[in-house]
Length: 206
Image: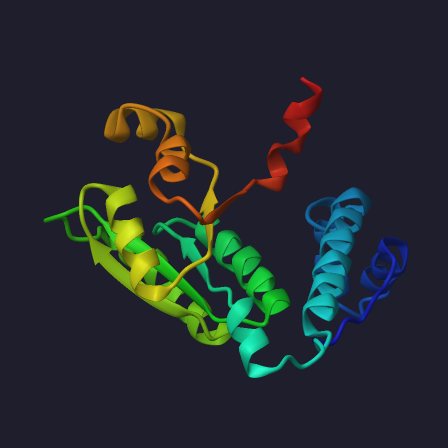
């Protein structure tokens, strides 16, 4: 990963000088995406990603074979054909890198239902991302998500499960209760981590 870091002000100056877009397009760009606050937020996000990538790449001290077996971990990410699942997969992958272990991602498709065109597009994007990250992508079928996840976790030897923030209406409709509570109850011995949407942090002040 190569980061070329510029302050928002420097980038805006390059735009005005016609070094990014032709000058006739620069004014429009400066009034839209290339506003200072948006550029500052994007810069912060990129710097955080680079810092996490560097941390993940730090070489761990080699362990003896028996020690490796004693601390063996395996990450499982639950994904859906939605854009937010790419964030879940990346967050889980970074944790897997820190553990020095392999990772699986699984989509549990409702029994008897084929993906819509939009879902197929999102699944293709998830599979491409999995290929880039070296993640094993699994597709399982079943109407009981927790039961299917339990089967996959046992089969793959998962020790950590990453899930997105549950949707309240869907959770009530399908599970008649708390999905996370069921997972904690029916997946004993597994760490379950909820990947929050960072965009929701503003709600903390409401």
